[in-house]
Length: 181
Image (cartoon, rainbow, N blue to C red; front, side, top):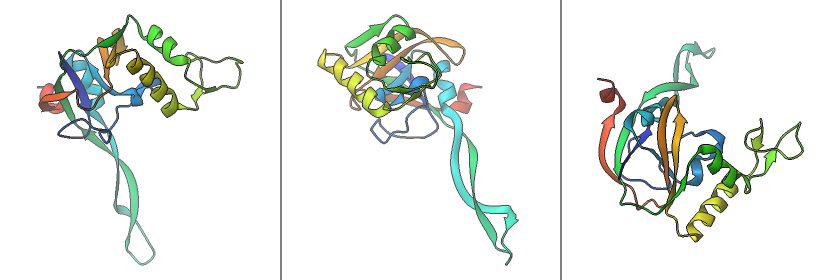
């Protein structure tokens, strides 16, 4: 199975230190996320990184430049990844996936007694909720999950999450700018 992963960082293989994609509803730490088509991975390869450098416009009284922290635009990479037909829990919609994950989540909300992920809430236990959800699926024999027909950055794609860092094999790495040509 060929899937795609976008990242602002270049790396050789997937591991726990691999920069996590920013996904809505705090699902990013469940596993390694992939899309079924290359164009849906592209937005994850475009972003910013925090850089600390000497200012060209701000100076101390003695004339020395101040050290400033800026957000620098970054155009990263699209990874074409091979995964050897894992046993995936299949969800027919994002709502069904989130409803199953929801039971592990503790939310902070101001106006509702029993808030859900659909409300304007803050997830209080992201790491714990994602770890417990992942453990439940692994206990059931799954190596990951797939959410069918997910809208992601105005595109419809299948969204894959693989739990093991050993499963994904990077077949090709393309700078995101080459995709646009």
